[in-house]
Length: 309
Image (cartoon, rainbow, N blue to C red):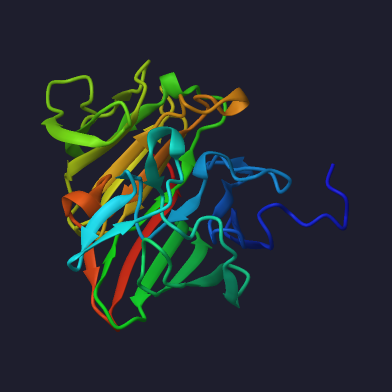
């Protein structure tokens, strides 16, 4: 049990609530620790006395996923990042998920947090990040802004890492709809080596079907967009009695799906990380959908979670 004077491992905790929706945003990483609707946890979060497991709910910037050998070219120079997943010899999930974010604004149903990323070895461009988290009758909404506050063009990518769940429904039994046409082929280090259409294969969830025994830690592209340019992924109980969906606006053209097979203990295959991404893995090397932020320019993107499939 947490003692009254023990500081949460994830720092300050900011709770927002409205219309039966409640979420907790944390200081460390500025991410999402919990989200529930009418008392049902739709995000597989973590305790205040627990180090964030499996990047749960974290903001991933200025790149998502992995960079091969942590090394990439940009602006006529080669840059070398620290290898933050040394067993695969890669740099993973950016530079802002373990730093303290600041509280900028707070109300009962919304909170805005921010972090100024300083230039550093391997990523020499200063960025200003702002995230506004809110809840209303529709669910959870996150609006992100990233500004280049330096004097040079900066490479940039963005993602978030929530784990979705339906309590009492096993991952195998979840019925998923994933509106994508291709999947990224990866090597033993989970780095991209190509792409393949999903139509007619075991990786096709364009029509809702059970996840079954599929072990997924894959990026999917060729997003089938909604009328507003965005897209959404849904999970439902087999009998249709419950569901949850995650949506992202037109800035996000990729979805990463991770069924938690690499996690240990009680978190093993307990929930599904569904991550909207602006670019695929290793994009700083391939150049695929890398955003280039000019000095003084700001990128904006939004996503959210809704009860119901």
